[in-house]
Image 1 (cartoon, rainbow, N blue to C red):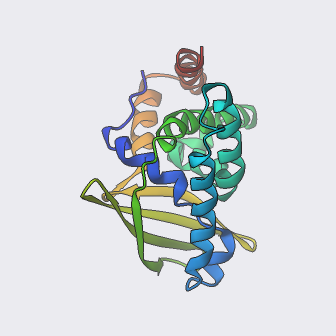
Image 2: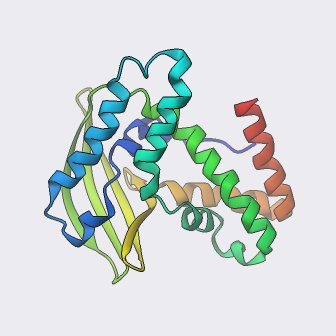
Length: 203
């Protein structure tokens, strides 16, 4: 059984903090961040979309607004690590959407619990020519958390491929889980476990 890391309890803010790709070419344009955040908050605060019968519509709008900033394929590969080379093309094609759904199921319900948390972006650190990290501090109910995003430049676009919470990488955490499973199981076994997990969550 794949366990959810306990630090995910602070991830309601994750999708509220995604930033337009253009920002990283112009890191001083903070208004671009605020624009995306405001779009998400508008969706979350819409009383019509808060009705139970409109839950899926609200989630669809959140996906449309926020998830375009993620590189889910790269996140999936990073979550497997070196063992990705052992995946056949068909296994990779199957794994990526399964892992994406797991991330969605983990975060979307938490995103919808947004209650006016404050975010202060502190700095951007260019780690390599194609990798950058953006640091922020999140204040929630008088508690502060360090939250960083790692982005990879693919062609002309910057995409998020990892999130670091209080120094702990989300992708590295999943990688530790998946590598443990793959020690005692095949790739198909891992895929079966993911499908089982999703069936329980979505069934």
